[in-house]
Length: 482
Image 1: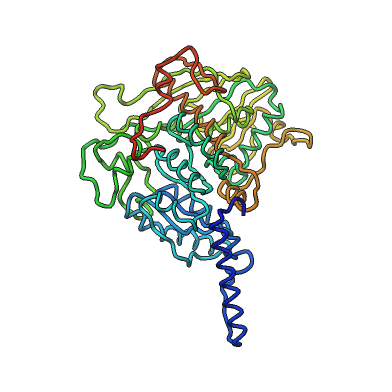
Image 2 (image 1 turned 90 degrees about the vertical axis):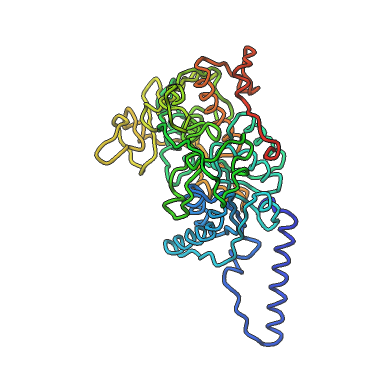
């Protein structure tokens, strides 16, 4: 396994030597010993990746745990949440995911101890843990990610990479310095479950639509609403830790999450997704996925736009607005890249990514893989996952000397295989940081309601734009800082 700490190596050597000693003693006294099958062969301690879950909410229990449970060489051995009720429910969620996989493909059940933490720093101090997946509100991503790599853990981080461009740069630099394996959850890159995104990007990169001119990115939207009445803080929630680096503000449930710990309650969409203190709305929520795919097809994964402009409606623009949630509503923003490609991002476009060239277009979205040749609209069977202006575009094969994009499995599996075997990551942190930065630049243009000029190499605004520069970072409370 790549980059094991010496303590993990020593721990596993100790387990191995203890097992040998026990077997030797048993043989010497002619006493039958039963050793669980998972202790030997591919399930030997030295081959197991010990994973911990930081965050036990909707995405963690319904997505991350599910995918990690598919990987025979990994065990979720610990969970953590500042909501004690969610943390205490975490082991049951882990076991349920392993039981589902066992029923589907004959995998193992989680019959090991699963430790529970309320403070992620205590979890990171556990030297038996090799890797963590971080499924927290967006305002916690960068800080917890930095602490995790500094503690020697490999990391799978749910998108977006950060809440500000400054935080994203700090995170990417920390990963580079520590050399940890850090995957950002851009699961549209993997062949499972949506191979159409890679197919579309390969066709674009190989000129099947001619010279790329425009990319249209369609996102969902978020309505206003939410109850702003102050409520008593629940005893099960460490609300100060939940606020983390963001400013102190009174508690109300619609600002945080449901306190129903049933599967239905945990899977409900939390209010923080619609609060600018904790995220930027759909421009990063879905934008981190689709703009990442746009960059992949544009061959701009390590760069960004040079000019960004547009407009957005915010609920708080209405002085009579009585709701709590304040992220953007309907919007349309545009960006120009150094290669001359223009990107249009809006939640009034069909949800997906459309590449438009001089000789045709390709449009891709999520859904079961199906090739069609009609406009990107819904039909009787739902949204078509990949369309083109000409069926011959989609039927085209990529030759051996053409551009072949990285062929990776599902993102969690890709991450675990990278830890185990050293295979490349599909979405390393610098790629995730760049796609997130582009989203945040669109958000800055929304807030300023004017064009801004960006230098992607320096990661700085041009023309001494102090107003835009001030939006590259946010003040952080010292006790929850990097």
